[in-house]
Image (cartoon, rainbow, N blue to C red):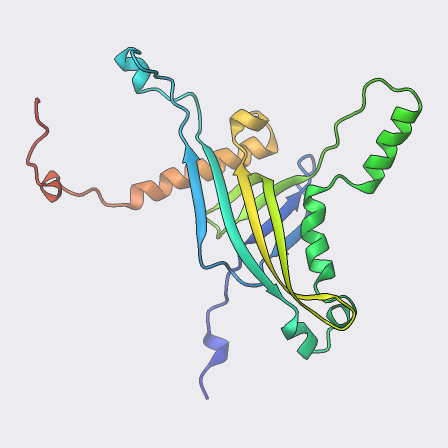
Length: 219
C-alpha cells in the first residue's frame, strides 16, 4: 500500500505580494506545477572599456542585471473532479486574473488619476504596486518586477471558460541600485546576495592539476 504520509512535501515556486511599508504579506501565488526549467541571464555591469587602465578593467559598477524566464502550466481538471465551485463556474478565470492584475494598475487608481486630470491637475502621481517577490526555495527569495507575461489558453468548457493554460513569465530582479539600499526591496536583495555568497563557500575548490596545469604561468 505504501506510506503516503511519509512522502516529502513538495515545495512550490511562486510569487508573493508584499506591502513594502508594513511588511505585510498581501497575497501568495503558488505555482500549480513547478516548471521543469528556469532560465536566468546576468548582464554584467563592468567599468572598464577598451583601453582603460588595468584597475578599471577589474571593477564593477554594481550588481548585474538579472532576468528570469519560466513557463508554468495551470489546469482546472483536479478541481473540477473534486467539485470545486469556482472551477466549475469560472474555470481558470480567477487564477489567470490573479496573475494578470499584477501588471495592471488598479481601477481605483486609474479612476483617481482620471479625476485629477479632469480637474486640471498638471502633475499626475505615478501608479505604484506592492512589492513583488519571486520565491524559488528558501535559498532564493528575490524582489522582482514583471517584464513579460503571456498566456496561452488551450482548453475550454461549454461556457468558454479556460480549463488549461500555459503561462510565460519574464522577471527582472530588483537590486539595491534600483530601489535604494535602505528600502525593503534593497534589503531583500542584499539578503539574497548574502545567501548566494554563503552558498558559494559550500562549493569545494579544485586543484590546478584538474585544469592540466601545476602553477600559474608567469608567476
